[in-house]
Image 1 (cartoon, rainbow over the protein chains, first blue to last red):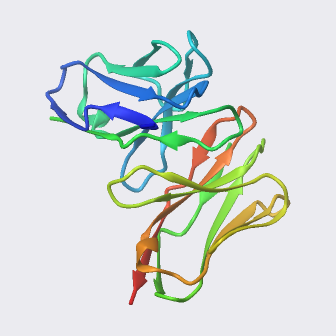
Image 2: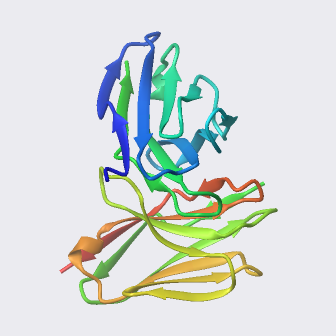
Image 3: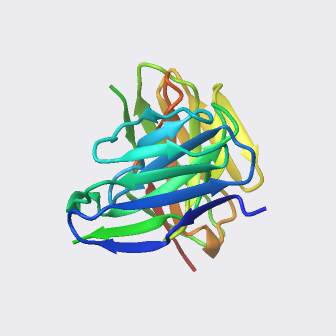
Length: 112
Length: 109
């Protein structure tokens, strides 16, 4: 039982490049989330999904697209990376709301 | 709008007790969470309060007063491994979590 996994763990991109972050959970959770965490700030919700085939915008969705590929997997895509997207990205999942969220180990992304 | 405040950093001594406060303002409320985050790691769930009062879980307790917009996390018998950031998060009327910036707790021997 791996919980929530994320790939990659680290990545360096040049401005304008694209990439996809992958998240998978094996806990049969309905809800999945993408957050970013920046120094001195709280976690901020980018996009989330309340079930297979659904996605919704969070607090800071601009510049990001998501896909809920199936119940297990939720991807986050940066089409044209910008230095302001340098951050640590966490995926999380929960059984339902309100309920505790389980987090993946994070992806450390640097955009130069 | 919504706002969450918690101290940026606190220092305590091994074996002692520490209380980490969190105050919030919100128009909708569906509970308050506390998470622990060690440096370079993911947040992990500690507690959830939706009704007023104290919830105790081993060495950790969490308190909520909805009328005052106030919560605290109480850590007893502090251990060096408790050195971490403690994140307060409010679940709003849309069931989205609004996170505080976290309190970095430093434990000294």
